[in-house]
Length: 176
Image (tube, rainbow, N blue to C red; front, side, top):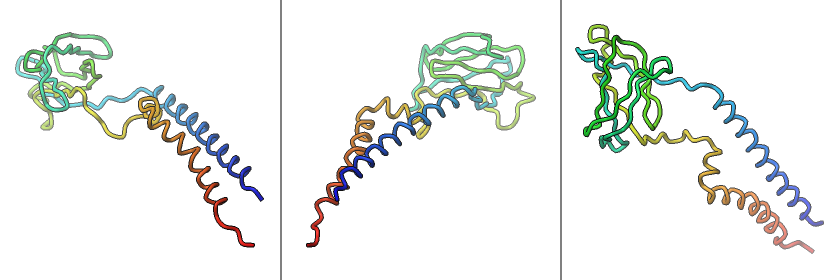
């Protein structure tokens, strides 16, 4: 009695499982992308001159100069500026409110407060970190697309493991 057809079925099941799971993952990614992401809001205290101040740094803490910074309210551009040699920027606003600060790395939400109305947790300036890595937050499809060696390894394992199991079963001595 040969177990070769059984190993073929095992390989076919593994391949089918990989295909189905990838479709489910891609469908889940599309569903997640269609929902708008909610910005985390940071409380910032305006200066006495109603300036919203901030600094742009790398993930290693080095300041970045000449980075474009855009202040938006309700999705509309209010002001634009670039960082100075120390990575600092500022915007003069009429009053406090909710704003989005846009750089090439993304969007940061902030609530600007006047000095008298600011909560105790409000910072004097907003810190924007470029190149920040958040571990474990990549969609699985990006892992397969960005690392072809990993994808090839998974595929090779899906083929080799059932074959190795089949071979180990056929190598065992049979009693006579």
